[in-house]
Amino acid sequence: MIESQRHYYHLVDPSPWPISGSLGALATTVGGVMYMHPFQGGATLLSLGFIFILYTMFVWWRDVLRESTLEGHHTKVVQLGPRYGSIPFIVSEVMFLFALFWASSHSSLAPTVEIGGIWPPKGIWVLDPREIPFLNTPIPPSSGAAVTWAHHAILAGKEKRAVYALVATVSLALVSTAFQGMEYYQAPSTISDSIYGSTFSLATGFHGFHVIIGTLFSIICGIRQYLGHLTKEHHVGFEAAAWYWHFVDVVRLFLFVSIYWWGGI
Amino acid sequence: MAMAMMRSGIQTALRRGGRNIAPTAPSKRGFASSSSSHHDDAYETAKWEKITYLGIATCTIFAIYTLSKGHPHFDEPPAYSYMHIRNKEFPWGMFCLSLILLINFWALNRVLLFD
Image (cartoon, rainbow over all chains, first blue to last red):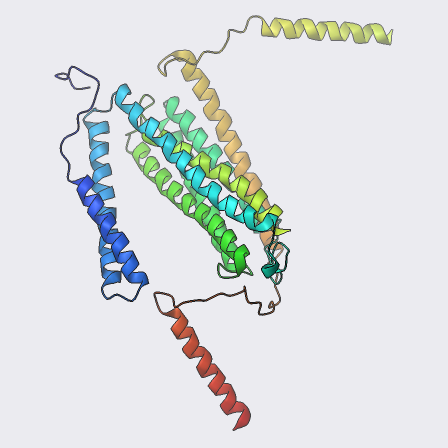
């Protein structure tokens, strides 16, 4: 907290980024709809909106890092805000992925006559769960162990060990994404092959997308740890990344048991 | 004799166990600046580092084993109505492109087979 301030709260300065982010989101959605229907200029508007959102994300988070790390506005009280914000965010992600599991279970528990009354549907070849799917299942939890190592290293004040641990976290995450890509390449069915292909691809694809987001989150934390931004008293951004990463790990376990193993035999 | 030795061994183990538990102070997690919490975190750092290495080693061995087996090949399934559903053109026009290639392939076959 700065000396002249008589309270623990951060009264933020006026910022252009909320409105710029909103305009970017509007351009992205309108451009996306135009792109998917035969309208001219849809791709251009979509690209511009997407670039606008990415730019807003970069400059907004840059400002937050300046306010928290360099200007010291993020007191213990202020840190509660992003902590409490992370919890409903992850809960909403859990609900989102739960809906995908629900869709798969809804279709597999009582297969309709149109798909042969069996699951997987008649004519669908599925991946052997004991091959790459099983190989790819212990990798995210191992990466989760690495992020826990990084957390304890930060708390113990071992800056270099924390960087090494985050390098291990990111490396394992990249390996996991590579195996996911290999699995899709070898997969005998696609997203357009019956309800099995649709539910399988949505659940595994969105999990893969979350792995990529978590990887980017961990990379940012690794860079910040390398630059000395994270201290043992103040590392809320890292904690949010670790929570997110553990959520992604746990979803992978459910994914393997529910979609690959139970849903594939 | 054997029973007596066993009873004595159990009593010794219990006494030793009790002695080990009694003097240990309950672990406290206070503020990060306290020395006991720093010691705990150093211990936990080392522990999770070992767990990570164990995970990496397990995944590596398992990856070598799985990838060395090669990947399976699947037969082409029958053309069921619920398979390979393409109801509309992709935004990037791949459907159109695929259709043109298919027609060309069919025409080429016709030319080669019947002419």
